[in-house]
Image (cartoon, rainbow, N blue to C red; front, side):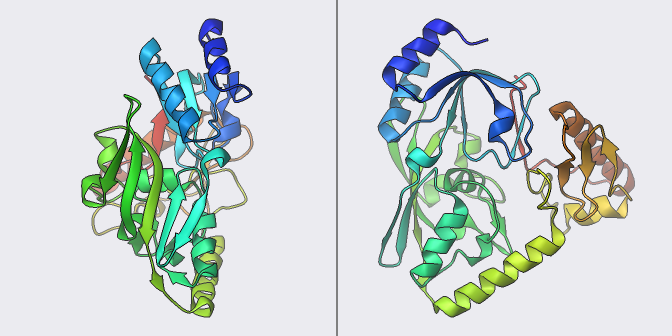
Length: 303
């Protein structure tokens, strides 16, 4: 339950952008998750800085989310303050071959902006859900490429409330990881270096990727994208399918019959259902192939 003193303190800092007991299922692509004690959606980076400093000064846990597309939130919700980086921080600027993007912008918007400017590089991201902040933090990728291939530099806000610039090298990108996994901070914006390309070719490649995605992924059901990372030299989806687990259910969470590395919400699935299914998949795949599948999704509210 929200501390009303803290709630009103935040409300005084950024009026109209603070809610108590906000259901997190409204903010995750799985449509799963209990209430956040206090939920804030800053309208700009200054408001974000105020929230971070407030949490630091009060000693309150702070959780940051974007579109919630790679996230499993506990049925019990999240204690402390949840900050959503959304439409208030979603500006996109194009200068020459570079695109500078605030963290709340959807990756799809960046891809279409690059396309319309005749800039190649973001074609691979067609259909990837989520925001730029989340994509950079986890080095999101598909179709043989990843966000890190385009990153020039990143502006972060650390939990002391200070803005810090990071080079691509500083971000220590690797497969589905960045330095933020070991040194948590909030991505505020990122600059990407693209290259000139014929708009027609960009459109054709993006259309092809989207067609393949629609044919192979369960986009009609709430999901969080790929649940497991691909092990070296193999595919998590292939391993899961080979065990015959497609279609297996726990409650209203189901391993997709279309793509085995997706778990879908059939309507009223809980985080408990999804967790049980994840553990079942890991046990079966490990028993059959000796491979310990590692989750790609982030678990929040389990502290």
